[in-house]
Image (cartoon, rainbow, N blue to C red; front, side, top):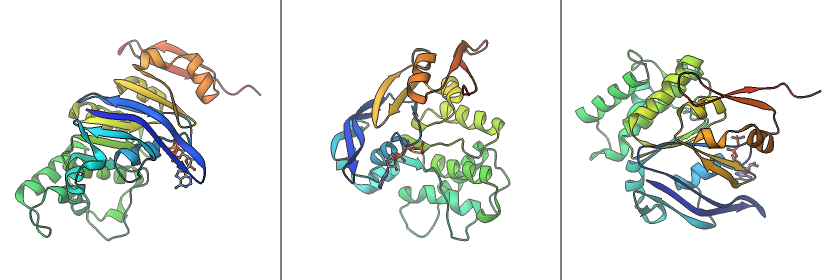
Length: 255
Ligand SMILES: Nc1ncnc2c1ncn2[C@@H]1O[C@H](COP(=O)(O)OP(=O)(O)OP(=O)(O)O)[C@@H](O)[C@H]1O
């Protein structure tokens, strides 16, 4: 269980997050939605303790994140950042094995369990056979999937994903979110694609200008009125014939 309670953060006298409260029940996939600059990445960074909030509290599994030893937090939470990259000349296997570092007894050597977890994670993101490829030779979508494999190899309790479907073709977008949902790992994911959020998320939390506008199941939250209010767009919302979830069609902007 992840809880975020009355979290605020300001920079240069500007309030970026204002009293944000939300939660992700165990095993759920929670979508963090909202326009560019509304504070999604900032909230993920605060949950991962990369940014310290000015006020409020974050708990994972009932424990205050601010009080957890760094090594414990590193084992429990995995962050897939928006532009995860490395300048090092690493193989795909080595990148995925970075996810095992919090579990290692020895800083320098991988165990059989580490290698098995890395191989399993690569298979889960559909990258069997890529282990010996050099990172810099991969396409944008392949890199994104390797970074998810690194996060899965970490075997965290909490996955924090910042626009995880960036660069992915539609097949891999659907595969990735299906995989995350099936993983059973509590996940908070910043998403721009509202139809993907509608299809896969148990709950969506909509931010605007650093505040939570509304949170709840996609079918209750993703209404034409909300989309007009938060994103300034006109849209029709139907019910998907197979999933029963919202299916959104956008109108071109009025000229
Ligand atoms: N360190 C910082 N210094 C100054 N401004 C910052 C800093 N970090 C974030 N901001 C500002 O805070 C706001 C929220 O940024 P954030 O990256 O959290 O938004 P976001 O919702 O993830 O946006 P996007 O959808 O474009 O990725 C933005 O206006 C950003 O410019």
